[in-house]
Length: 156
Image (tube, rainbow, N blue to C red; front, side):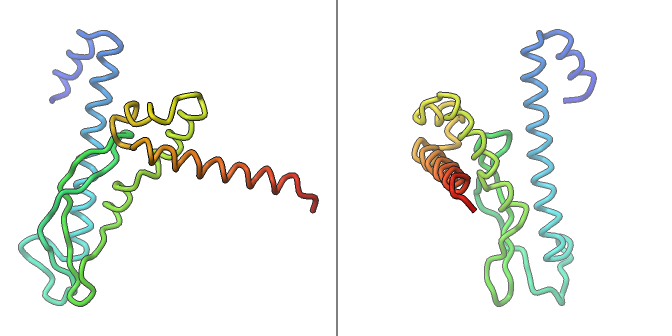
């Protein structure tokens, strides 16, 4: 979508529609950035595409389906694969960071703390977190807070 069409869409729609359009546009930009970052990491490990480093220990190994968390939602992506001559599969740091639901932990705990039932978290997060995962997150945070309370109550 070019800038003029985007500006026109913002002006024609209401505030809610403009916010949703902007959110979708930014999500697309983040997704594109992730894919480019993974491609750059593969280039750094293997050399440029179609001109691999003959001295390099890593080589491209195709791609496979994976998931990434973008804007709090689980998204399906194609992730590149890299293999090392002797050590096998190389885990890409960019993919590891994007596929980890770490950022969702605080969102889930905050939602449950504000009264959302654990079963409702799965729907609210569009299936990105199951009710079991939400429950485990809540239990983990509760244990952490309980430990802080115990430590605070213990005289030094």
